[in-house]
Structure formats: structure tokens, C-alpha cells
Length: 319
Image (cartoon, rainbow, N blue to C red; front, side, top):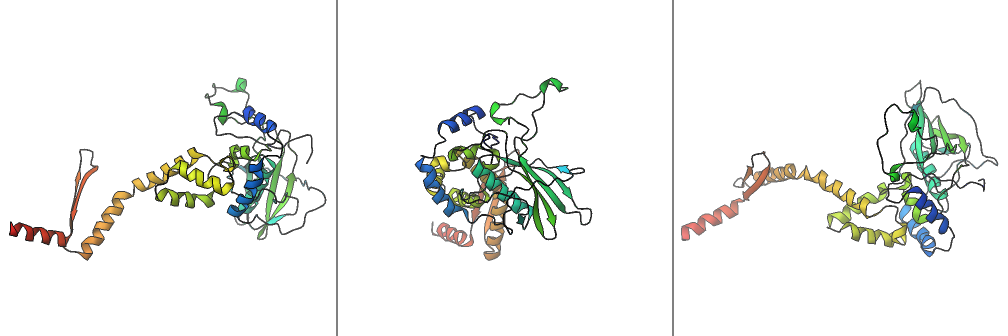
């Protein structure tokens, strides 16, 4: 990679703005951070193997041009998954993958290792089977920001943290389906902007931010036993070798837990009624009743099983 550039596309979802992140990265870019060295071992345990290539690397980076006409612009951000940051192979022309999703994951892991964010750009479907047969991934700083003076209506004001400053970066990866494999047909490695070197800051890059899919089930399990978001973060800090190395924060965990609660909130009553129906089959004397308020929302529930009813009758007869 050209030493005059530092590859990195910074999309933030955090209060700190881009300049602050880059300044902190510059001030702490030296490799004397013990947490970073320690974290790579922990993350390697939590991640699993990286996507492997089925071809050997060429001596030169391929840059085969192809026609983008008639392609759809997906413009989707890609989510990162935990991986060992030291052994992700640099893409090259001729590299093969089993699916385009596998290629996307590999390129995103590579982007995290290098220090930039990616997104899905144009794609094209085959005229033979209607399935996707071409996909382009680009640096999140590709293109350029719209000129507000040329807009017909004034732009909606946004917080600085949500704005990506584009630099017309040309770094990209194009893949094409040939048979059952996806081949890398075009790869540009160089960036025209700084990359993020500090490991603890890479989690603020858009495609690497958020709870990885592999860890959501674990977080859901911890939430099921009533652990708070703070406790969950401390556990994940042990896994990653420090809180600074966890690729998400307490707010992400809280939001995910709230989403879980919301999903269950709409299912609680149906699950309860299904349970009562099962009890009624097992015990014909089982009785339940629901009381609703003026908005037809359940505010009181009463239930009693057959043995309790019989015991109550015996108690009344004694009195």
C-alpha cells in the first residue's frame, strides 16, 4: 500500500466527531498499547477462522475494468464480525469465494484490519437466471458530498457525528459470479485519506460498529438472566481483553435488550393464553378470566386450577 496515504473511511455513530477520532488516533498510533496486543489473542478465541481464498495471490494487484451500466446501487453499509486482526489476506485479482456474502465479509474484515469502512455499491443481475452475478464494494468515503448551494431545498440539519466526509476515494473490490464461485475481477488497494490505526477506535467505523451476529445470542442469554447492560459489557471486556477493544458500547447493548423486550411484549399475552389452553386440556376444572380496561387492554388476570377449587369447597364446608 502507498505509504503516503492512510486508508480509512470514518462513519461515526458516536458523540465524538471525525476530527477528534483522527486526532486521537494520531496521538495514540504507536504500537505500545498492551490492550491491543492482549486483545488480539482474546478476539481470536471469540471469532473463528477467516474466509479462505481458493487461489494463490498474484504478484501484482489486478485492476481489470468492467462496465457498470445497468447496475443497481445498493449503497448498503456492511456489518463487521469479530475476527483475528493479524491474518486477514489482502484481496487480489483471481481470489475466489463461495458466495458474494462471503466475499463481503472477507473484505470487511480486511477493511477493519487496515482501518476503513466499506459499503455495498452497484450490483447487477444475470439475464440468464435473474440472480445477482456482479457486486461492487467501495470505501465509505467514495464519491463526494453534495454541494448545498446546488440543492433545491435547504438540507435537513444533522449532527456532525452522522456525516461522512467523502473524499472521492477510489478503493474498491468488484466480484463476479462464474459458475458456482465468485471471482475478484477488480481491486484497488490505495486510499486518498487517513486510515484509523488505533484498534480501540475502529469500532466507530460504520461497517464495524454494532453487536456482531455471532454475539447477539450470547447477549440475549445474559439478558434472559437479568444481567444489566453494564454487566454484559464487563463480561465482553474480559473476552476482548479490555472494554476499549469491545466493538460496541453499553448503549448498543441497551438498545438491543430493549428490542428483545419489545418483541416479547407483543407475544406475552398470546403465550399466556396458549399456556392456559394447555392447562384447560390437562385439567377440565381449570378456570381463568381476563379483565380489560376502556382501551381493551388487559389489566387484570385471574386463574385457578381444579385442585385449588376443590380445596376451597372443602374449606367452605368446614366453616
